[in-house]
Image (cartoon, rainbow, N blue to C red; front, side, top):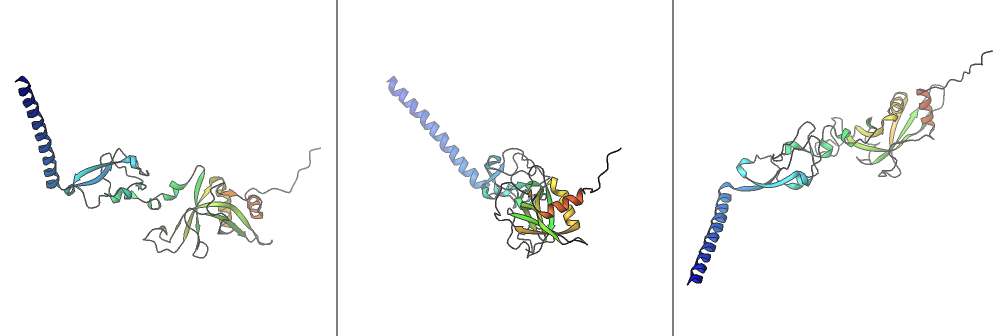
Length: 251
């Protein structure tokens, strides 16, 4: 008799638990239908300005669609790999909006973000002919031609394997952007800060042209000085002239 009562009590508890679970699930379904929940992504933590977003920065959540603005980005592939704006932090728990996200080439200081240690950005006016087969990420050689008044022209390669950061049109828009007119006007180059003075002198004293490097994607020994070139020696002498006068030792 006692076993029968115990069994009935256990069955009653199980039925009550099953009923609670069922009610919970029905409630969730009801709430979801009423609120029209939509999956989106929020920031897992504060994301600092000019940060490349990774999967660790995201949390998937369901939010009532009416609370999501039209510009909320709900596609994970449109968030990961993009950058936060230069002066804007994305706070923890915030949805991701298109206005917060930039492709790498779109961030305002794109050139600065691409520079390595001891490098600076050097801009050079170009045209369709000079960069017709070049694009960002490739390497180019910088050639200089100088026409002294009394001597024969001095020409040669000044820097080799220089990385092209970007090529922009006359409005400063990257040629990779749909908003560009796709007519090249400025090339941004990553050069060593130690060579900036030589490049500035080359701009003043002569003309500079870009030529595709023999191995345009070679990442070894980037932007190095061609110290065997006659133009390199000429420019160095202009910056630091060596006097031919020698002083006689005092008697």
